[in-house]
Length: 317
Picture 1 (cartoon, rainbow, N blue to C red):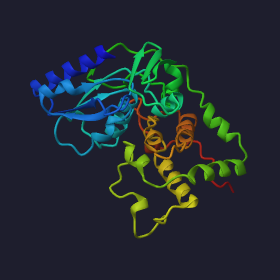
Picture 2 (cartoon, one colour):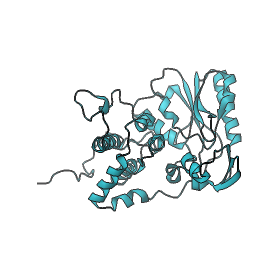
Picture 3 (spheres, rainbow, N blue to C red):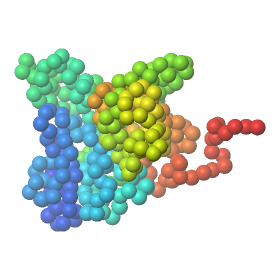
């Protein structure tokens, strides 16, 4: 990844020197290992701050809206899928955007790392091929990369960017087709069991809205949860209102979710938000043959109507 990071820095420096763009959005090293942070570069000499490693998990498409300047963005496969949706929804202008595409073999889940270290502080981490070396004060430990990836990354079908102006690095091999096993296991439960599972999960929600804020697709000028007239849900936290919030949030993402997992990663309470979002991703794919953000020229599933569309919700006389 060091070669890829060097290529990103060189590309960013040239773009700024030649005034092709006014701003480059990428990643810089965080204060902790595997915690790279979004970085905004406006001067060529600052391009040296840019990094790319297995801790660059944020979806940078979240920072592209409402910008009049010309922007370059370092974009993984899931980032580019979100960019495609935002382009389709006229939230960003393609002419003002330069996409630095980077292949991605998955991002490491720090929660899984912390569990493996059993309370020890991680001092450094190094990815070499399919293995990760974790360094602590007690010594080194080697683990398989696949065992510590975010669950979203394990099922990701788009490790390579779907749209870009320049592609850096070698494309990664596509993963085995996603069988949505997690969603189907949830569907196999009885209605009472599903309700109990959701109630238990959402009883942990503190409604901080980190999931909403981390999502590139959640950009309504006023979210329904913030409305005072009418009041859709109470300000206090309870499982029923929590479920209402998450249900509306997920339905709002139907046919738009890029399945990047940003909502899931942002949750400070560790809620399993993926099952709900992926349920809609699976349903839209099965019912309409559509995946969000894969093809810029494809008409979004909810933007067209065909007489043979599945309509099981209609009441038949």
